[in-house]
Length: 192
View 1 (cartoon, rainbow, N blue to C red):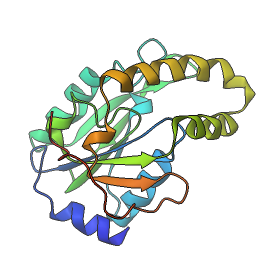
View 2 (cartoon, rainbow, N blue to C red; view 1 turned 180 degrees about the horizontal axis):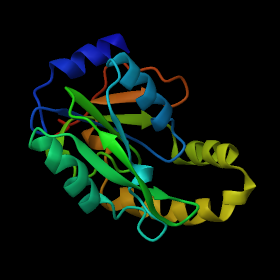
View 3 (cartoon, rainbow, N blue to C red; view 1 turned 120 degrees about the horizontal axis):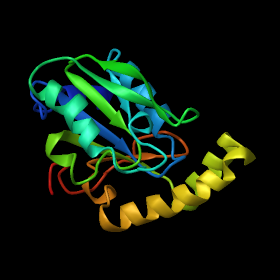
């Protein structure tokens, strides 16, 4: 993790003065846990959680909110703040601060999508088969969210079918062990 943190710090800024790094993968693949560990290794890097920007009605309709509330302020060298969606209340109910920092992480399904890639210095992909990630997510969330997982799986499958992130990941992480896979092969993170 220390080596990856040093590598990310050495990248050229991609969003104004910030090196924006996406942590992407299937729901349940370990993105949030890995992003937390990476943020700590980076000395407390801010983490934008895409679950906070997605909604029931628009699970992948968050790109405009991300751009306006986070990417544009960071690109201008300013701190950012975004509205946080409350999944129980089904509305945006609070805000989260994103201080401008040398490295800022964006974690969530679709973080490395086409609309975000021009702003990214690196895409990190969590390697875990969709079925295994879903099983882990369902175990984590319990039976009360089984219906949600049905709809989510359809939306995620449709999203990655037209806008895959994995081919653009310069770094891949084993979703079971959390270890960076050696000899990661991928197209440059900033490719369309």
